[in-house]
Image (cartoon, rainbow, N blue to C red; front, side, top):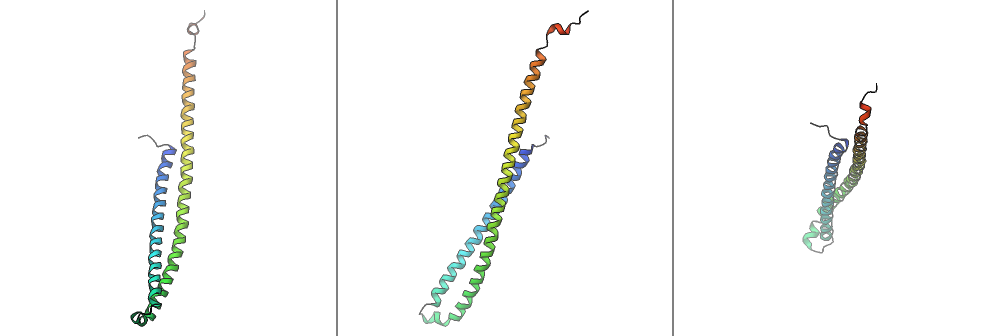
Length: 139
């Protein structure tokens, strides 16, 4: 089996890195969704706490406690979200950098192949240019 070129190896690394980037983006989307759910629950609790309905008034202490827990959860999710956003940027930067290295390696490989083709043409040209009389020995 032929050894893979540097650009092919880097191409594989780019694919892996892009996959890691997508995983981080999915984690970010999940965290954002969770924060939205917490925010909606907090809005519903505020509506219930401020309601004049006697049923809600009876549970106002319970609602206030739940609101406090939701606030804490939102703060935790905010911290997690910021960490994941940083991770997404890092993964994207790594992938972009690897992709640039891959493109550079591919250009060098193409240039080397072109140079070798030119050298082959030159070698063929000089090999064919040898005069027949030079093959005959002089007395």
